Length: 247
Image 1 (tube, rainbow, N blue to C red):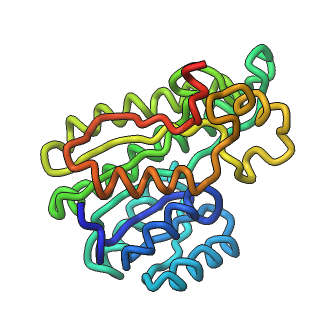
Image 2: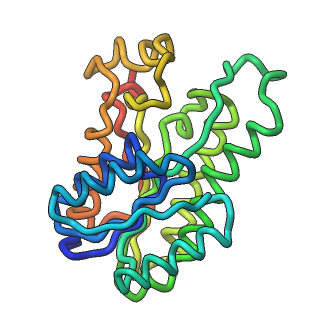
């Protein structure tokens, strides 16, 4: 897919993986909608980084778990740039609860994980469907190896990411043949999500073949490659974890 000049909507793009993807794709002279839910200042920083790469963009506040907010965001993207060609569902939510702590896995944590990590993908994909189909676009969901092996920051998070992987397959069927839908499942990535979680980082990086956690740029490089060079790939989950899941 030639993404030069295309319009790309990235949810949860104010920091971390979302920011890294926005900056990487900005190298292609794109238009980027930087979605955020609460981190406006960080979203503005991402926008400045995008513009420094020579691309255009806007920031837009929307809670992806709220259908009406998502629909408004997609309308604004079309109003600003006349199309949506690529959707990257990166927004995510979790609470760190040890897997063995079943009593600590509160209903509100379940709701948060499922609403953002699953419904968020569905709402945004549905809202962008007509534009993506018209433009032979692409959807890329950022999931997690937690959805493959049942580990991660909590049981609810792992379950929600497994649902995201399943949803990727379902949407790949529904959006075919005009739109490809894939996901990237990172291992531990050094973002603010894992600040202070040294034991968690060590557990998921030491002893793996590549011996380190991922950087946000490791994920953005794969996103760029999959969008540009994956024209015959759909319904797939690409694991980016330094080999953690094979040990």
